[in-house]
Length: 196
Image 1 (cartoon, rainbow, N blue to C red):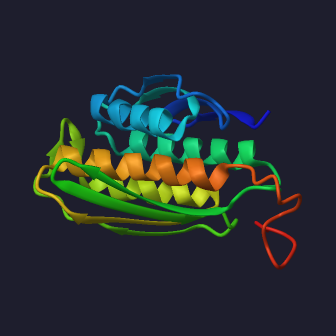
Image 2: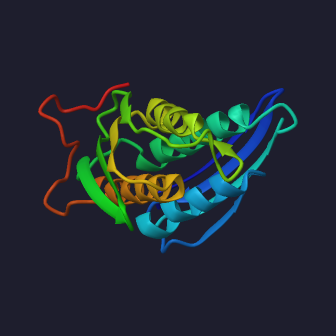
């Protein structure tokens, strides 16, 4: 079973993430930030990951710590569930349209964290979530998932649609990259290892 349960507790947040890479998109998300819940639901449904997320953060301050720590914990769950990463496809990409918006995500589960995020937002918030935190979410996820992640919004007008397209593209790319290739029995690397 490619599953993980990760808990993260700090003075700012308390996070629980339960993940099954080989799921059916079943999910239960409660972060205290409605728009983040909506985006994580897309990640589960469109990636076919079973996902349970519970977060209690210092939302009386702002959303920053909760968004960051959810992303860090989610990335760690993907890293743990992937184990040694033997037999995985490893690299994948996805284009996803959402009405007038089009997003692209490419990733490599290489073990080397790096993120490049190219998105312009029209407003300072989407729902109650500051739009500037979306890039931080993707960057934080890449660090603990130990993946190379590129996300780009090619065009769009509505910030809600832009965010949905990005998270759906992340979901589809993660689904493809985490799949097991029956032809591959070892780590997909000429080095023979995907090191930390």
